[in-house]
Length: 119
Image 1 (cartoon, one colour):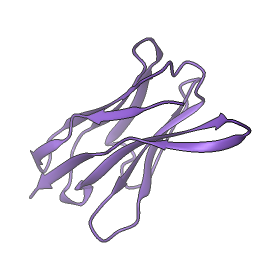
Image 2 (cartoon, rainbow, N blue to C red):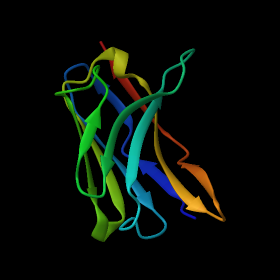
Image 3 (cartoon, rainbow, N blue to C red):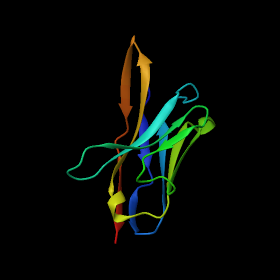
């Protein structure tokens, strides 16, 4: 099992930057995929970016070229660097992963961190 704790959210003007961090309570060395989701008011939670243990990354079309996901296995931390922020990026951002525990895949979510982008 693992606990995920996000930090780094806040209020920023359009065009600004923020870096989110996701600190894991256990080693992430053996965790294949860790990702970031976001949920805006009245909308479904959506996948923003994912990073594998080998460093491969994938992004939603809406953030491609502006956001960068990375991981530091030595620090058990995953980051989301967000540049050129837009008001439509306003949402609660969640760190997420899946682990095979007790013969079943189980999902783990952080508590979320609020990102608000003002126009």
